[in-house]
Length: 565
Ligand code: 9MR
Image (cartoon, rainbow, N blue to C red; front, top):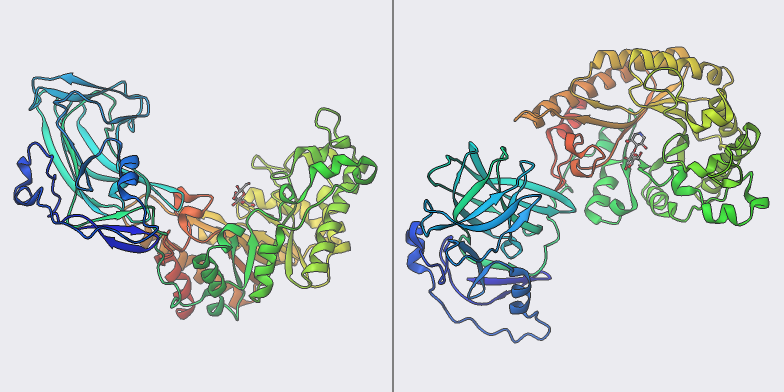
């Protein structure tokens, strides 16, 4: 039965078809067995008389490209006998149909010129969206194996999934097959042929057919999300210990599934990018009137209303991230007249700009969202990876005391209820910690710092003991509180990576809880994002929710760590 799914309306359309059938036009149903018996059996379907119903034939034709039509059910059935090339080259591969005595019909698809393992042949497969497909292929190659996979995008992320692989030899053809269900939310769907090795590949027969009833999805369905409403809440679980936060963006908050999860799980948020200088500073206005803006660069704030409004309306606080940083700060800020072809601004001018920038941020947020920003990352990542202070443009223009100055200004303009933080990554590492302590001691002596943010972009390789010792050392040496500001824990590549990562989260959280219960002032813990593929380190799958917001063992570990205190 063919069904049409369009804007969540399903219409019955054309015909009944049995499992993974090759369809009426298939010249040789051959290996399909039982399926061949029903192929081509048609049943009249009611005409679609609904006004506004899409012209499915047109859509089907437009998308089908190389697909044959089987009374509206797409299918790819290649024996290459006709000599017509319908596959599309993948990467640098070169495709042609060649004479090949070893092939059943004396012709084969020849894939040569492969420079990388993913180079090969693509078959566009958009029309198979939401259906289970069976893919069959027969290959010969001097490569040890040939693989057939499906590629598609869901929520903007590309996924690659193997359907089957065959061990190949160069003289005779080896057949293989596999089934795969393509999500209804998939877009840009391609079935492709590749191999780890770079030698040529011959393909004799190749087919993609629908298993069971065919459903036509005119467009990718809204990606399905897990129901998160019954999840235990991190925010509640940790309410008596510290705030729980997540890094968010306006795009995330505009999707109800994410927004609901953040509301349920968090008592704090951090704008992942929107409060950074590059998002705030306004170049056009700054250069439009240098008399006015030379010492006080123009700033724009309207975009902050999404994230700050969300936090306010949902009883959360915000970590203000970040004021003085070498990165995501436009270079023009450091030049006289904001002209990058001219000279760097001098210390005096840069101190004025720094003071005015900090003042501007504090004044706007206090006036519009009083009491909302609980903490400011006043200076971010000032320690160099190679040791000492990072030789950033702040360092070059102002000099070594730029950190002290930043905290001095922040203290001057921050409301009483906002705490001032220094924030850095790898800050648990011994040498880096020494450097950080060296430049923060004078800030602490001046009474201008309240906390150290340990970003904590870590992996399951990190020594939790070393981390905890470093954490305590900041407290002891500087008399500050601690925020874990950007937690994500990269997983390894093993088969049971989720479980291992969960166990690591468990050990990490239990130690944090233990320290807190000993009186170490850990007052906030923020996860740097929500679900794995939205993370800046997506490849390491470092967060506590999967893509569909189902909970990973890491999430349960965070919840359960409290029960096991
Ligand atoms: O997660 C942020 C990512 O979206 C940005 O592209 C990136 C640009 O530098 O910044 C990421 O956030 C960083 C944070 O602001 C400071 N610590 C390191 C974070 C990860 O790079």
